[in-house]
Image (cartoon, rainbow, N blue to C red; front, side, top):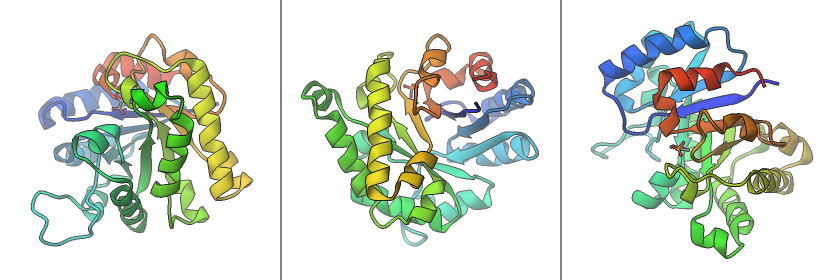
Length: 249
Ligand code: PEP
């Protein structure tokens, strides 16, 4: 069964370095049956458009402004990235939530802005270590979903992909246990059923992210209810990431 494999470049590579990565990547993954997306810095979007146009690789940004336009120096809007050919944007990545103090209210607004501009949303949710240690992870993620998806209609949900990314596992080399990933993926599906419908829950695309790499991806991607992976650090190695993106699951 095909999976959704998304790479998150974070703030890495220059546009020229990305160009040579992208040229190699398209060739290596051209026969892949998976859905493949690269989320790149804004400065790389035009390179992505040039190299991924007519390929099987989609691309997106890592954040957008919650506003459409205006006096917001340094911000980038949904329509700007859409115009550059992006089809996706990450929203609510744990690095934005923790380092840039993004609230669920702002994330909710960003999701609405992205959808209104025809972008697909990769919504990241996940608990910190203390919340996991206190055995409140499922409750915490359910509340994030309730807040982040407030006012989003069921017919829009097709364009919202949910990635479970425990904060303590992102970029740390630590990984959630298979049991915890399975349980959280199931919790997310049940919450979608509660908020929307059983049909919406079955159709939902749920990813895992947090230190996925060439050595552990196979086990994670075969877990029940996990439809793909969001991969940060490990996507920077074009050879290894191509292997993951080409895998037959
Ligand atoms: C991410 O950036 O969303 C991520 C999961 O990073 P990493 O794979 O490096 O943990």
